[in-house]
Image 1 (cartoon, rainbow, N blue to C red):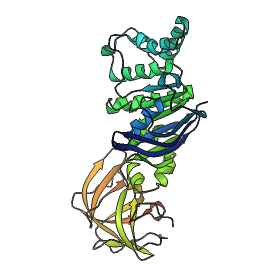
Image 2 (cartoon, rainbow, N blue to C red; image 1 turned 90 degrees about the vertical axis):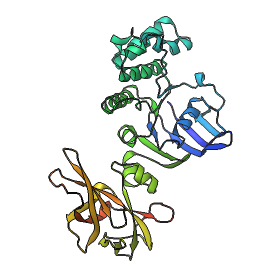
Image 3 (cartoon, one colour; image 1 turned 30 degrees about the horizontal axis):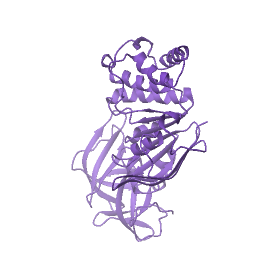
Length: 354
């Protein structure tokens, strides 16, 4: 059992407030991902959970036990750092054994745990190598293995894939997902990459400027973002936000046409949110739709994305088939799939109900 409860957590470094009252529950065996832009406080929050930095204000509980004053070595928490933090003068076996020996385990227990972990992470052939003799992906697996040997209640990972190339990130991401299924522990993972968050998480915690914007499953955040920040952060290509005027039946763009979208929120001005699969493009400018001009097309083999500039200067992405490509500067009309449109307040960015 490993349940985490964060209550009113604040963190201040001298005169800089970094976290502004974090309230969060992470359940037993959940894979929770903290995601957000650089500097939003996600790694700081992870370090507070690990006990590497003191909490300025608020309380952190692990299985109903208050952990604020418990030293890191006694929390039952293991952390994998972005830099791997392997000892260069030790081979893989000694790196993995170091933490386990500090726990006071017998030689036989240490050997057994390393054998099990090396088998799980496919490290058996690497145990006698030094870190400099390993690839980036192998070093990452050793860092994960060193944490696993301790059999922690909570497993923390701080941007563990950021030093890997794109192909290797995908491979190691699959290994981490499999690892969570195999060990069944509670994992908390920090990343700025929303693709990692969407593919790994049971629960995503979207952070911005030291605050939580929304907590939910990947599907919840993608389909019902709480505000414009979450809407544009989750999803790739990102959701397009368009300032529009509403008369209750149609949405209009100044000097750029108008479009009927079905039921609309009762607000004179709002932001229309469109994901690439919610719009359709038609060549030429027509009365029913928003007028745009094609900027460029991304051909991705199995599908394509057409980026066009609306009359107000907004860049909009639309998904098309590889056989339906558009030339730069081509005039197009954008129509909207009503059931896939999102609406947000023009004043504070919050999601508006129909």
